Amino acid sequence: MRTPDTSLAQAPLNTWRTFTQIVESLDLSGNDIPDAWLAASSHTLNATLVTRDVGFVKFPDLTVTYLSNNS
Image (tube, rainbow, N blue to C red; front, side, top):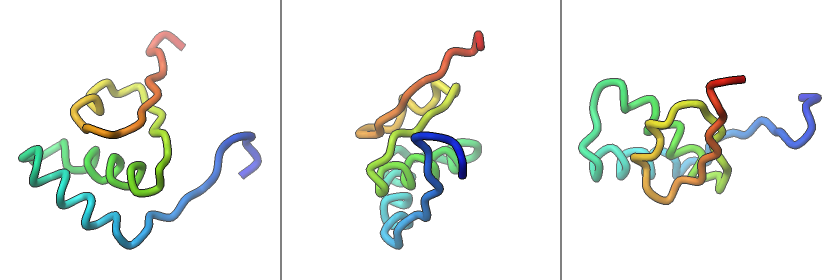
């Protein structure tokens, strides 16, 4: 990657455990499942998720930066 302040990360092995805990504790299904994987990956990497999707507010303890939809 040649973009400053970004990096490609591989999810740690414990991401699956975090993912299942999130899905079960929030009783998620359907379209929330892929978001739960992104949330679990970001959480286990101690990373900030950058998105335009305000639906990530449902995930506790997730550090999120929301981009404006106007750009």
